[in-house]
Picture (tube, rainbow, N blue to C red):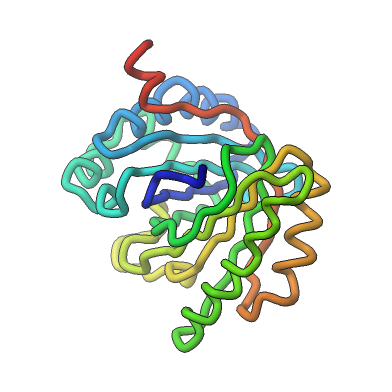
Length: 222
């Protein structure tokens, strides 16, 4: 089935090599579990770049979009652990999208994802959304299993590393996430369907490999 989640937090960042071991330990031993434990968060997934920038990607699915502006989540953001603060301060090239999942097709999660970042115009959002939805036949291709459209909320989407009051130029961007089992199939889908024909400004494309995922039910049984 398509994603049951209605909201998605997407974060991506680089980290200097000398800080990478602690960064990965923090993500694996504290951060994902801490976020998934928040009311309304359903699961979190971590990826590393095959052919993409920034190097690391995380996707956090929420039951509703409103979870991502809830008092509980805002409290978590305002009260980061010391370990979190040390690592966040070292992020580079951070992307943070707080998004509505406005379309989702196929079933399951892939070990490989393609991420297409696009910048819609104010006057073509409906047309662009319809054009993206029109690519849903991709999920029937061998090596592809699902596809999702994430539309950032411009008021909530800003890197945690930005100073207060700074408007991120990518706050209104959209992300198409193509999930698959085969890297070549994912890459071909991005090139054929999104890199030149979608009718919006293309910001970037990238291919990532799953590191691990954590669901709310995993916490309940741990």
